[in-house]
Length: 278
Length: 197
Picture 1 (cartoon, each protein chain N blue to C red):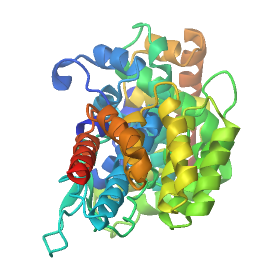
Picture 2: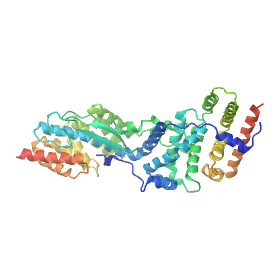
Picture 3: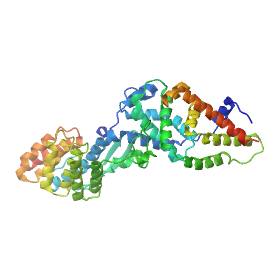
Picture 4: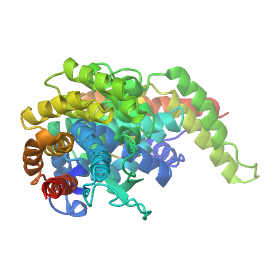
């Protein structure tokens, strides 16, 4: 049998080519975007966690206020002790412009459930989803892209602390966040770690330590959590009549926060102070 | 609460209306939406390329596609417009394949499965049987090629990309590409002639 080039090529072009299903393709697409976005998204992921836990934490704070007889923030937690339809908090990640989680907001004053960390979503397609791209010419690449990832120590510590926080191991979480911050004081996670350490301490009812930790966050250079930390600090300070003036200052400092939940909590805090002053 | 959680920017302009080059340029600036659009446009091309490489399994194929687009994103800034975006992306895929798919033993295993798949149709006493067997032999011959020749054959003859552009994206002299292509074709013809009495 003799074939010329064109006949050979024509035959070879007839070889069946199995293409992936739409679902497989979407899975890979999501993994690509999640991996690519990871470096960009890292801080944003943390902020999403912040926002989600903030809702819960503010709910706890509102619960404290409620226990003290103060009205709580309308957006932060259930306002009354009467049964009511459970509101939902929707978190949207734009990796594929789709809604990926709808989480019930927690009842006050019980510690709220924490949202699933976004990374779990990013890793929906096994470990290769978080692998950086393999190098191309001229350096030889590793055998498989899934072997490439090695999280930084601060990231490992942070994730462990986050898991501890989710599991309710608040002391471990606080230590872990402190460790993450120590490992990379100027790293991208340092600000988040400082804030979450304070949250963990607050939820562990280590009031003085939590107050100090929140002050550290607020005093930090342009912390993205300054508003939330200020509101939370306000609620902690409100426990102590001697600190009501400062609590008011903290609430007012958070009154213009971009986050509506923080603003609402701040308003509720100020209302609580006004109510107590009457 | 939603808006501030969205970390990925939209490319300016309507993505469907943007040229491949514009998308790649946007991708070079870190625009994830542009990367998504590029993926949508070219994933089938890369999947087809991966399928023709006769990878071990779906996992290896997905890995190649994923690694290719991550590499596309990482190196988008190096695109100089000397080839079409499609050729450039396939060049990236070829480079990724050369580096990451060195398991020749795995290829052998997969080859057997692939050929079995090709010849698994019910026997019918007509020309389709002969044609199917012939395709099986071609697949066998293609799989037997050294990886560089295989890539040259797939890109130039099967994807019908410009040889000049392929040589450019593979960073090899044009003469080298033609030599690989020549050897690939000759080896495939020889393999077919050997197997046919």
